[in-house]
Length: 356
Image 1 (cartoon, rainbow, N blue to C red):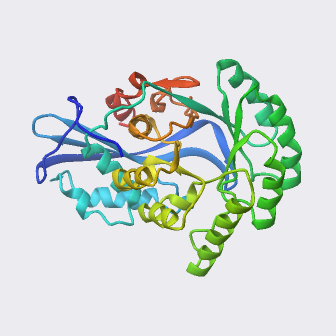
Image 2 (cartoon, rainbow, N blue to C red; image 1 turned 135 degrees about the vertical axis):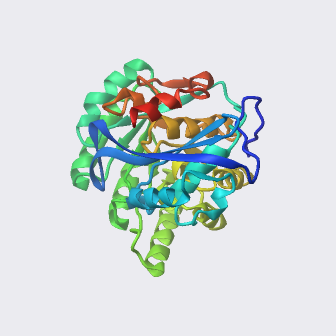
């Protein structure tokens, strides 16, 4: 598990009165993101700012993704409005567990930054869905990227399968490909993909199947069993993403003996410290990934990634520059590696002021 205590850490004593502010944002993407859930034109969320009497300030970002099963942005705004302008540092304990993203934002604003354990980390480049991947991949390869994430589950299975070999052929020597289906496939479609992936440079297949947020307990159990079966039957590893949004999801999958990867989006995890401690104890394979949040949430997530004691897999943060307004980006340009000094400091006030 990761530690705390660097000298510049923010710290709010329990029960201390603080000034609480929040601002809602809607940040259009430079290019709309196409996923199995449809086109995503803009990111919406809430930035929170906590300031104590001494002037020490903490920041956090609530960046929900409702189709992941999180709360909505409207719910976050309503809860923030109810807190008032002056509150206590104990406010985290008063927030409903349903508001996982808001709890994550407040915890980030209250926490001491974890101690970095890596001087630099590799980054995976995000490829667009469909044939657009073949246009972007060569330029990312020239920049030095060697891990690539391709969005699949968007078009017809047969069309995407036909493209797989073209994408693999375009990879530089020694590169690896991650496939992200966002839960778009049924069991048979997932089997077709995994059969095809077996002898190709696919690092893992991310969330091939998923029970929708409205699914019954029986339906969820069936999908869980399907994922465990697929993980056991095929050599290409699987990764859980949407299946591990809630804090208890990780505990449940660890208890089930999940053999694959865990994709952790820190912006969506209410109890990040506890979740990472459980994964560390289990020696789980973890990939830290962006939730396409703004610079404030991304920097908090990257600090956690740089503090992770386990295997340092390529970060799922090869998404920048992401927004029309560059003030919202954590990284100004696509880079195949991030240095710890690139993420431990940032100008949160600039983003905050851009929202005013």
